[in-house]
Image 1 (spheres, helix red, strand yellow):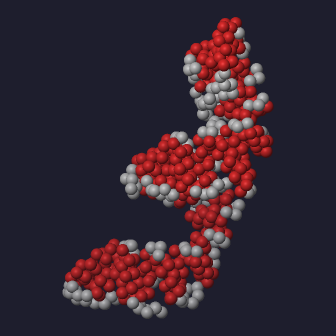
Image 2 (cartoon, rainbow, N blue to C red; image 1 turned 90 degrees about the vertical axis):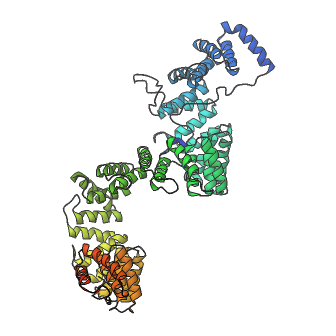
Image 3 (cartoon, helix red, strand yellow; image 1 turned 180 degrees about the horizontal axis):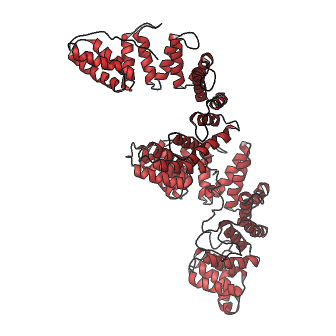
Length: 627
């Protein structure tokens, strides 16, 4: 599901690790009453001698917008030992209310209040441990201001449990989050769900969101899914942007609610406007593709860019691909590479692989085998298995070191031994080409045979080595049978080679109509050799009615794709069409092209053209073999 981050990203979590806490500073406060106003007057009178009165006066000043004065009163009361004041001072430092923001001071005062029994303070101390804002006591400093030291779930668990037992609904939700997201030694999903339920019953939006996610994880029926959606909707109504995104995703895919793409996109837009980067990406993709919404490439690119700048690596990759492909937006390869690098550095493996491929083949950027190797290795480190094949092909073309060759062979050998058929084929290539290991055609054949059980490309190559007798005894009958399996699976080279065997009767009886059918399939994939073979069949001499018009057409198509003998035959057909200098002028370049590719008969044709009268007409001549 798109809303579940396999890396455990906090984008869809309850508590955002590393984010500064921003909750309303006046939770759990009683409403103002006439009696409260009278108490405020009394507090002003006795504040100089009562810490609790100073605390109440400080809170009143904060509520009235006089933050600096309020903080002054609260600080005095906090130093006097008032637990509520200590908690409030910690909150002021945490949020920069009436005093410059300072996480270290916030943590110090919150911890004092937490030790004094304040459930609210215990919650915040636990949250700061989860964020990594409090570091272990044995380090040089107890608190840090500028960067996270990493979450300390064990310390957080203690304070969150105390807050939860003390009745803090937020503490209950945080405890559940720790029991879900902490290390294996403390995770307990059933207990976490119970705490989420208690928090949700108390009306805590984070508890509702957590309960909804917990229900989704174990949902086996529509009823449980609907319950999950109900809880997440409560969190969304309370203003949690992530919950709004989740409702959009559930609506798009019809989980616990009727599928409605139009409604989902409306919700994605609302979440995107609240800076939920996953929603920005989903909306951007929909606009770029015109999926459920009118296509708008410019707006789509804008949302993808916003998500990318907010740290969404996949969105950055999509922006890069938009610039690389061009189209409605002009291509900009410098921008494309910059965005792809941003995505790859953000841990998005497909972007690293794309960069490796770009530098490998020199598309849009200069060919650079070192950079290709770097980015492909990065993609492999990020878990992209396909990049191992790209890396291996780079090594096969002569890039990399002997160490790279050994590493490539080791990857494929290890995977092949586990039964991976694709790896078995690639391991066979290592033996066939001597990549990271001594060349051994017999072992190459053995691994190809294993891979041929389920890999069509391996079926083609195993068929070929049987026909050639390379690493195995020659066996054209069996080789032809393997080619048939590969051809039926759509391997174009197998279709063409099998077609040639059917024409020549190799490995079995000749079958010219069957060969024609195979060549026709291959031409659908643009195979020039198959086009030439069809031209040869229709040229005559086979068990197929000759058709000079079809022969000419197929020779032309193959010649235009660079097939040398097709260029020769098409030139001959041009000479045989009709009298006139025009055909001679058209034929000459095709003979020259064929001669440049080493066709000696083309040289003879050019010599003959130089000697014969320019208007002489003659039929296409010369042998024309399919193979």
